[in-house]
Length: 312
Image 1: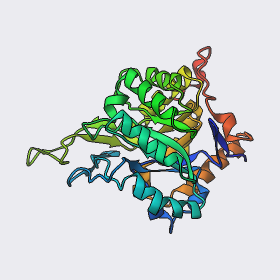
Image 2 (image 1 turned 30 degrees about the horizontal axis):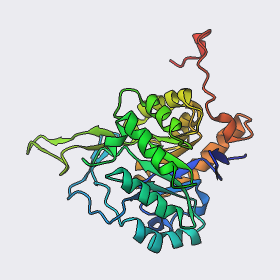
Image 3 (image 1 turned 135 degrees about the horizontal axis):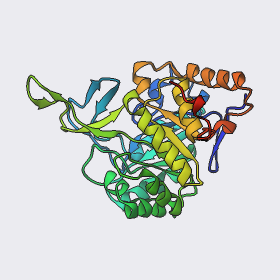
Image 4 (image 1 turned 60 degrees about the vertical axis):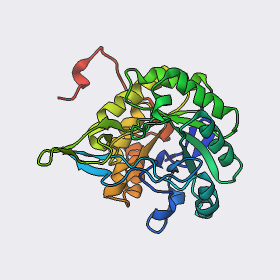
């Protein structure tokens, strides 16, 4: 079975990518996961400088999911290229870097620095984190802001540029179109949903930031719908994510139109899930006599002539 996929100019050996924020900088998992076996890893979000993030508590489990407000804690781009990137290169990992910023200039400068170092395969622009008040989602919730960030970064790098879209908007497909118009090579979606959990005994929020981002299986059906809508709206590839826990979940996104998928929250519960995901996708292709996973992308059958195929 051919599991390779193309995301713009980027060729991945398979469609399974470790999502940003849930896989550290990749090196933390190197002793239990063969980093080179994954289609790619998206490292933890990077600003120009180090960032502490929010105080604890900042993660709470929810029914079928997780709420987090880490606040994009990170080591900064310069420490990353000096300390983490060499080991990732040595491990033959395909590295996508999640780029953050509080200003347009910061997005541009972080992207420029990354473009000067060997071993970075693509830039994922984080314009959708709901857990910080400055930058980020302020761009991702504005069509003009989305266009401006993508367009500015596009001018300083030849690496594939992949904005990560927020689900916290009315029409996510319009943001995918804005990104495409600005020169994006692909879009990734969805980031977490803005949510809140309260301890009823103390009547206090369970995380210090009061609100946070909801991820996990609870959001998957909404994320699949949004991936489908974006696939219909743009010609560039779509990378789907949101609550993927097994191969069937990943296949659902691919059939809806995702050229590749990212897995995040499930990695916390089982960091050894990656081979099962790949084996499950391969097995599906064999059972359905499909030669390449790329042939499955966007293959959803929405014909309305005969409703007999609808599962009851």
